[in-house]
Length: 394
Ligand SMILES: *Cc1c(COP(=O)(O)O)cnc(C)c1O
Image (cartoon, rainbow, N blue to C red; front, side, top):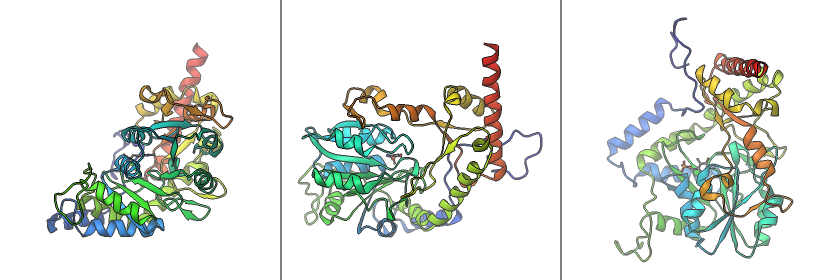
């Protein structure tokens, strides 16, 4: 994959779960930004990236920030969400969603997920709402959108601010509309393993001009627009650099190419022996959704799921990296004591815990060849044979 002229004696190349898709065009754009001298947070690439990203999301405003976590934090601060407020979030997500709620000083309330899609369960959200609820963060998990229309109706009925955490789903569609255009505002990440990358980086999109202005003000040390070095509030330095935006501008222009290559990889997995022989299902897709291929997510049959750790370990020995699904937030020390709500109103997040225990992410980069994907399957098979022998011996 990386080396074309490996001899039969060399070990096969290591296959990581994720690698950025970068071309010579990103290289040229970053070099251009360096040569222009605009290396900090002013420059033409910032404006260009924000404008083109807003267009991409089919919304009027996009505000670039330093990463996806600061995007979530800044948005909550801008809306005045704080210590007396509850924010409903899925338990099955990357930790940044929950951490940002805590950074804002608010209280997360963890809801269960749809057992197949893994995204938050709208029925659980409905049961989780109290007088203290201020906002909901809907996470488009592993590239699959949340069913936003019923969630938006619920949020509007209760006067709640609806945030989309679209860090893992740039360009996905829900009933035809782009993610980012469905809540009151949305956040994105451009970390190195995301669909589009700027190295580190983030974006907030919205259709609210007042929110756009407030985010820009807070992002830039809360400096008064007309009086320099006058700061009427406590602000942040959460800006993106022109170097990152140069990378992002080119990445966004290559969106179709980048996602098409990732889709081919996912399709090859689906057509392979992991599905036919092991009954593994890959990235689910609801009829109303156009998910995007972020990480390849394999849900293991229960008999194999109980051996996930050993399977991962053997695959790693054979040079194939994998990742378990995110650990549910409510199982980790800083988040264990907050309220949890399932669709039946109980505090047992059964769907979340079941899916988290069975999920496995496989090498997902767009540069994987058919041979690489076959190797992942072979290595998986070898790993399952090992557990079979061990259990016979036991
Ligand atoms: C990656 C990610 C983030 C955080 O983005 P960073 O840019 O790494 O700070 C937030 N939420 C979700 C769901 C993510 O996957």
